Image (cartoon, rainbow, N blue to C red; front, side, top):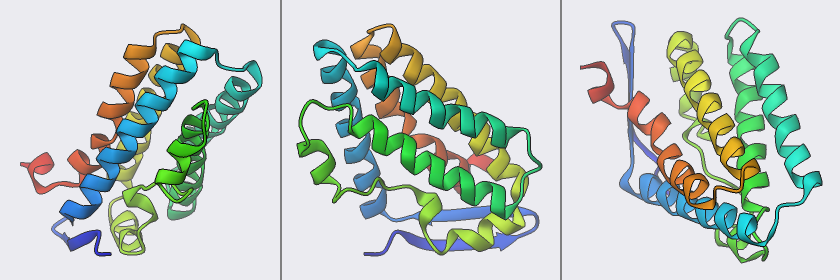
Length: 171
């Protein structure tokens, strides 16, 4: 499976052409996460599960205080995957998680991304901050029982990295 069709470094700019297959997979995941959150809200979200999600968010908040580095971003990638796994696990049935073979997709886990991160730490700091802000909005919607809003935010969330990495983002 090809997920990055082109990665360009140069002139202080990072561009990654994410493949159509990857973008489609990411979109399907965001739909599943959104529906999982909405159904969980409708049936009741356990406080223990919410606590686990909050712990994950707090860990990312602590990372935001660190100077951006490849190691900091790698830890963010791990925590981001945990966040999305926890969201999928909100669903009242395990079918959602199985649809993704138990592993949420993210452009940051791709091996081709490491050189891009190394050469443009400021961009990846911006992505971390944008994603964390949206993660917090998603959790707030879940906590308040706003199923439709949580679903919408999760569907929109998938595009942050793709938009930030695209050549158009720097035009």
